[in-house]
Image (cartoon, rainbow, N blue to C red; front, top):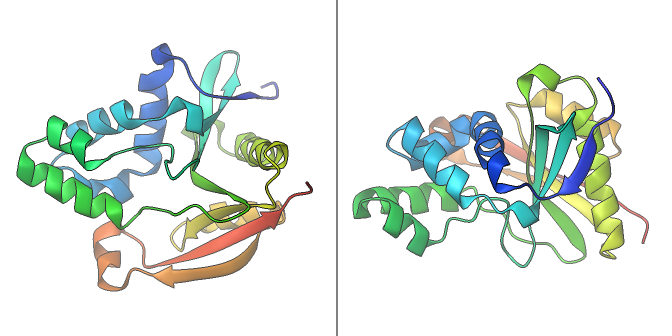
Length: 196
């Protein structure tokens, strides 16, 4: 396998593929929001914002993505109006509540990442590392001070990758009883400074 080509955005013909990667990686977190997996995947695919995703391709096939926040909007944008138009009212309310728990806020002088996922067949091949490098470069080009991300306690492999890349823990928290709903209890906020 050659080195991945990484660029911001995807074309519409790649939306299904990107949505499937995102849906698979975050299935457990998104499950409380939607009545069934098919509905959730349909909504996620439609809500993806190409201009807020770094996309890794190998031989022109999408193998990984890394979302980021920009102007308060992340890789998946699900405002109330969108949910209300796509779902019955009670399901839209459920989705809005469930996704609000997972929302991230932008941080001053930092590029906040909004989900990194790599195709299962390409894990361990350096795609995640390349996406993090591209995120650091993107932050540098925007004149930002650091890259920030969150990692859940049920994903030690990802946390180990972030530490190898020079990220350190700067905060964290717990979902408390909601941890049973989302499949994780604690999360860590990690950062890596980038040169400006």
